[in-house]
Length: 394
Image: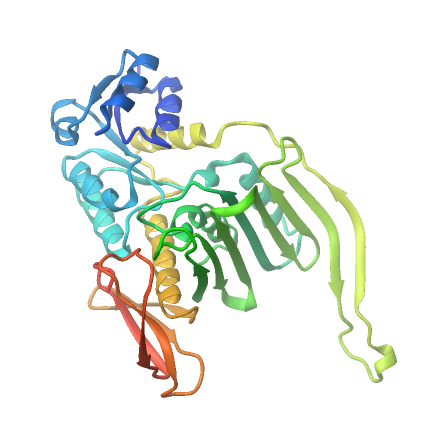
């Protein structure tokens, strides 16, 4: 009989209980401990799972529970120190999205995991959804032609966060799907938004991603919309896909719809766009819980020594985009270029200012934390601003 993998879950608030529920159902997993500072939460979960030990001290969880792996589902700012401690203790580590609060923190975690020979995985749950896997299958088969753009809307009323804005909270889901579909990192990111409820914490954002070959993506995120919307439209040169995650059965609909323009024309009368309207079909998709598949994948990688589909490198790439979106917010929506080069081990991004040089512009001052909202101050704008992320949000 294969030895079971001893797992502990840190964080029993909003998402942790879902991880606990799924891990308990997996035969390869022995869920030994759940950890949280809130004793009332622990008491409630103990009433549901009396065989699982409760603990308020994370250090004891790492050093005294004989665990093989740790799952971290706490607030974003605690991800790095908790994951670093787990990796240094030789524990396989699963971190909920986003992986950390800076890309340099993510890179450090990747290096520690590599050095210690343990699995590092981040919780990009939608990559394990049968719906997203079906979408990729359709795209990879060439059924929709070349991707032109993707538009994602993730809107609802709440849940408001106090330490991160709505882009950091909701956009990682859509970013992970878009990056998987595009198969590459964007060349630049721009983001605009507003803080209506909590000063300095944007509750509505519009993020734009530019990719090679003129492909683009738009992500709208909001805590203020009266309706819950989880929708993504993928527009191809031949067909289009609409993915509605709230639809109970037909989550994917493929539309045989496109627009074409004549390759050449001599007179205005010869110029006209051709609109094609064909059939719509909804492919069958087997229902299964993505989170359960994700937890099973984590255990499989531990057992087989494999690399997770949502590994630390993928988590780092996503956080780098979120950092660029925060920088763009602070610069009033100015595009931030993502340059694939290294300068002394650092990742460099360049923000190109828009408008005439020496024109007055409001540029948000840097707050104390890397994810806080803007405090505006008037400065003189230069043509280009060079930004180097050094791991401290600067």
